[in-house]
Each structure stands twice: as C-alpha cells, then as structure tokens.
Length: 197
Image (cartoon, rainbow, N blue to C red):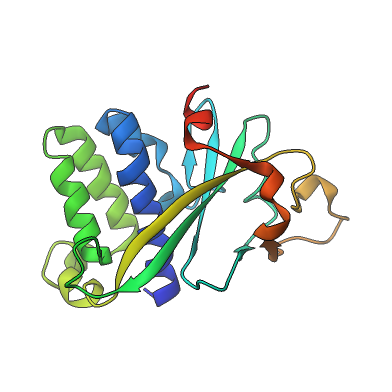
C-alpha cells in the first residue's frame, strides 16, 4: 500500500473511531463505513453520506476529487469531510500508525463480536489475509506516524464547487480535479449539524 493510500485509510479510520463509534453502536458504525468497499463515498446511511479527504501539508488547503461520483450524493445530503493530519513520532502520545489505529479500533469492538467480525472482513478487502493475520501488518504499517489536528465538514450542495456526472458532456468520464477549500468557507458546517438530522 502506498503512503498516500495509507494516509487515506488512516483518515477514514479516524473518522470511524472519533465520530461514528462515539455516536452509534459498533455494528451500525461499521456498517455505515463503506469506503473500503470501493463505493463512491466513504460513509453512507439512509440519512446522509460523507466523503473523507486527508491533508497533511500545513500550507495546503485543497483536496483532489478522484471521480465525478465522489461529490454526488444523489438525493441525500453529502458532506466533504477533511481530516488534517501532522507527521508525528511514535513517542508522541496522540500519534497513530495505520497498524496501531487498526488495533485500537479492534480493541474498541471487543464487546460486539459481530461488529469486530465485520471490521475484520472489511480490513481483508484491503490486506491479504497472511498480512493482516500475522506480524507482517506490524512490520509494513507501523512505520509512518501521524497525529490528528482537526476534522472539519463542508456541505456539498448547490453552489459548492464540484463536477458531477449529469453535468458532463457525453464521452467524458473518469475525471479528477482539485477543490480549493478557501473558496468553500460558506459551506462549512459543524459536526452536530450533520448528526442532528
């Protein structure tokens, strides 16, 4: 797994751990997380969808959208979720590696066997079983450490800068583009606004 893929998965797992596992029972939280299943968005339920993007550069305030589907929530409210990370060291108390974060979430799920099984099944979509179930996971994914700076949310609604499939000319697809978050401040929302629905 590339560094960029590791960072992206760490961002999703932090949202799972810090947001969904605090607001929902474990089985519901794991079911809502679907980014690892190659869906258009990373979290989806009957009320809303979240697309998670990570930023690790202090001077950067933009994210790459990798398809015309990522910011298309259909009829459901969609929130672009920005996870800001900082490179860290293993000695920093709040730092996580991909390995340590996976193990921390597994520990949180020990009271719900079904949720733990579902989480492990989803992990096996990303890792080979020999890697996930042996010390290779530790060896490969306990080298890069990050600390969480902030999680912020933008409501992707009319006027939000995005490209969606229905607005593309015939013959154009599989596009990627960059969204400058400096231009999106009017769409910023609080976490409680999302989950109050």
